[in-house]
Length: 312
Image (cartoon, rainbow, N blue to C red; front, side, top):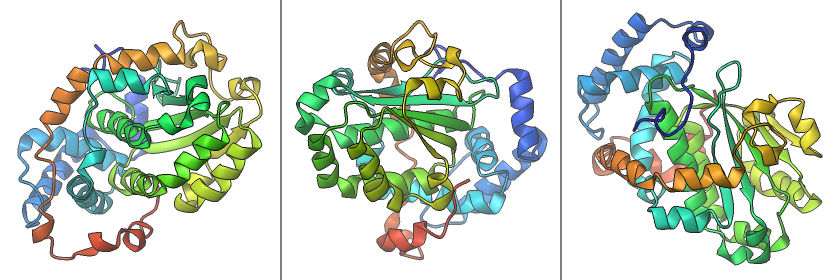
């Protein structure tokens, strides 16, 4: 899928060079490591067959794993396994589904990269959801979030680091009740995100948080996050403090920035390219493990297994 055509800036040559420098990698060595990773995957009876067409993606995957081939092997295994175990998290919504969801939750990547090459992603519950919290589709939220991450991991020229802004101004008791009722879905989402998709989450900004939202963060969300990610969560009392940490030109105008687009406009733009996303997902349906052939059936105890891995 062409993310530039979708409106997302690519890394500049200087930003891409800096990314390789930070991970202590060079393209030639990564190409060789990608071939090694592919050959290793071919020897695993439960993993799908890979060809050299996947080498550019494997090279980015290794780089996202901090240029560690051994870490990439573990995470690649999980990547294929979770897509077989929880396929409902790995599909594209229809245009109708995306537009309907946008009435209750705005979210997506912003077009402009931060100066260091980080991609900003935002989310906000809408006033319509506060008025009718039972309409929150948590699975759609998780599915879309994982889709954004996969697109960035897969696409050359895109960053391997994101920063997240979550505006919870409209978080009400009914949303809290709905979240608790679907807590198992959240736990699976976190597992997919933390161990199967090695995109680096630099910081998570929570803005306009009422006390109920702060309590939910502390009691319902943090216990399932690994320590490194918990330490990267920053709460802001206002958009003014957010503006001190993120350049204004990277923020939608209703998040206190100077971008021309609002959060809703960015969300609807992504909803309207759902057909392209669906085609992209169709090309990746083969990316699933045969769990019956997995030598170690540790996927039956995902909690204990996943917590052994650390967030990059």
